Length: 302
Image (tube, rainbow, N blue to C red; front, top):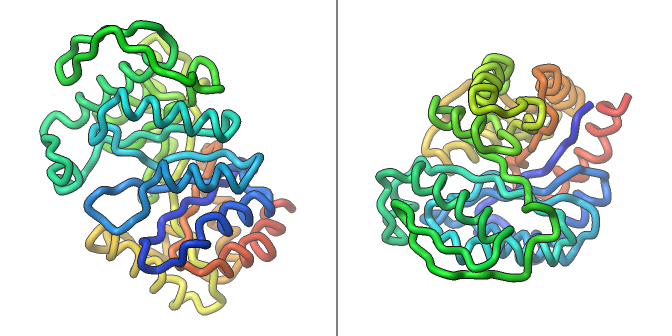
């Protein structure tokens, strides 16, 4: 069995302030590998790096990551400093999952053009790598220009925190093969992950990289309930709120229903070749994590 992470996906109005640290502590206590958080700007989620800083202070072992951060919506110098700080205060437990954006309002909200967002994000990642590893950085690129900049503290992880990418478009798969330390497959594509991975591996080889050095991950959503209809309803409600509509057959796509059904679906996902599965709780109820630890994880460890 591979590594299992928990994704904090719930909108802010549905939770209370103590939920963040409680969830982080509980995820670590039941032995999960990692805790992840989504990123939106024009949406009522919590700011991801602030949330993970709180989680870092409440935990000691669990890895922390973004799934995924809209890198193109932030200036890379400030983001590099924030990420380095988060890696520092967490003791080197941070993974930077980056995305390129699929909603224009997240960019217009911060007065950044939606056009060329992928190229902007790619340039930002390259600049951040230099800021984490070099002194007196001067960069004159298409989107960013800095002169003689040195930041600190440096990240604890060397040469820098792992950088994972997401996205399903061909250009996103090319970027994963060319640049990423890990790739996060979207929920609807996990069933076809071997074909997706074959493309990424080909792009990695073309770039002179070894595909086996790229972590293979997937993101899904889960609701545990003996009443399968209620579990399906939970996932559909979350997807509608976040994406605007349900684009797939929830029952056939996600771990939903009784613990045995959820465990079976998770095993199926790992059989597709994933190293890490990131699971978002569609129902904002701490009891869901209790059920996962008490009822589902024991089935997976058999």
